[in-house]
Image 1: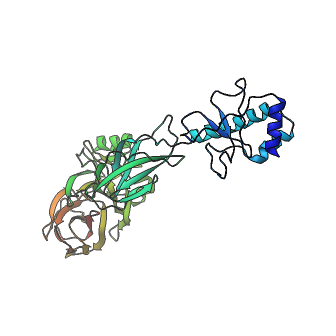
Image 2: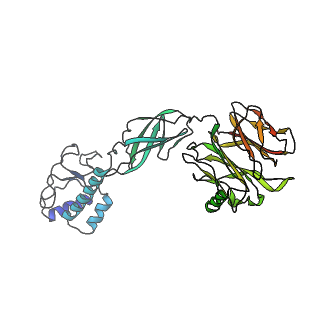
Image 3: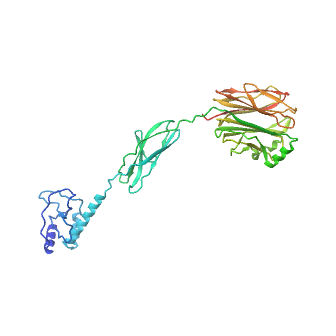
Length: 424
């Protein structure tokens, strides 16, 4: 019936006789269109493109094959005809719909993105983070895939959990919205960083300063103006050191949170243990030890102990290079010889720092440590001042250590022993 309708309309419009059916040929030649259920209708050149043909599904008797892209359905063609359109309008509509199909098919994306370039990586001892220059412009890139030593993952990959000094080959490819894949970028060999070698702990810079409770009027005046007592300038390691600061005061009540030691390298200190007074002989006086476990340093390093008012005070600062960990710290008080510290235990190489603080009122004192400790700083003016000796010792293996001091005149003492190690 559809054939009859088309032929009838062709005859009414006095259109040219049907053209002969051309043989199948590649689509790259003249456009060929199929009109379902219609044998063939050649079109007037006034409204059809040159060399355009509409072929039926059964152009060849007994054959269901045809040439051409997707075409409008027979239902759609019947709808066009039922609207009493002219055969020219119907076939023009069919041609437009068919051309839309051709255009859509031709527009299918089959072009892969460009190859990513500029591959690089940020590394640490256990992490490789790849990077590259993102592709921009006409390529609709939606994701990237990272390739590493036979494995792959889309972007978001991070090479965590790698052993130090591990070498890997990496590459990257780009994917677009149609899942076309670029060729892989040039392979880059990257390696995690080696473990940082940390030296064993050892004694570094050290300094001591003190004010007595009488005389030194000029010093006390400078103290009031500056707000504290300061060590001489030191040259300390730029990083990785532990800074121990010991303070002895004539007025135990001057130990407050606002009088913690400070320095000019923006380090902060924490108290080790608590403040200890000199009972029973000097209950109004006391001493305390502080630590900056991972201190910044450099040239011109100065440590200051704030002073709310003039006082007798002794300040000692000791740098332990390649430190970072207070492995053990012990304090004890003895009233008579032997002046033996409590023991500290280390798990590896360490620097031991021993501090002796006497309670004599004699004009001068001496104190000598045993067990291989060496005195590095002292304040021996006992009269109306806080006397102190500082000694250190480096140990290369794990162990348990103490120190015994011999002092003149015979007296009691406060004793500190601290073991500083590093994180290795």
